[in-house]
Length: 174
Image (tube, one colour):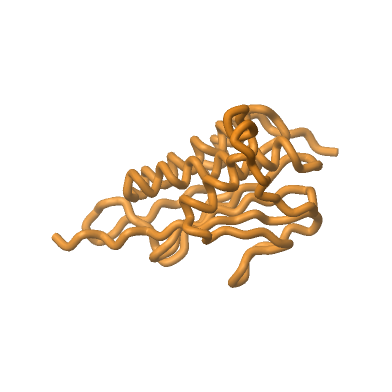
């Protein structure tokens, strides 16, 4: 079994592997398909690290603030669910920034699908169990799960992928 690197090692690796393209205007931008990967150990800190990872990438790419906020919240919910409910040795987060959308995929070692719980008023007040409601609402239903992601992509050999898409607003004309 291999050891899980600490967060400094992960961030160093991410910084070294991350490619940010420059548009002809010299501003940060994205090419047709930029993608980024984060390996999250099964620790309480993983949702925080995943939020910071997604926030950093999307902010550096100068994407819309509301989009960044929605992506951070949805990412947090999926990684938290994986840490709390999935068995295995952690998660892998895959972030793709494409023309027209941001896609986040969280792979974990548990084949059981995520379930939106039936919530009563009492359960709502008690807290917990609301994450997938938020993801469904913020993505307008553009999320799902399976052994892989729709339209191609990486496949998790054991477990599942839970993904969401958010539309990238078109840039305003100068």
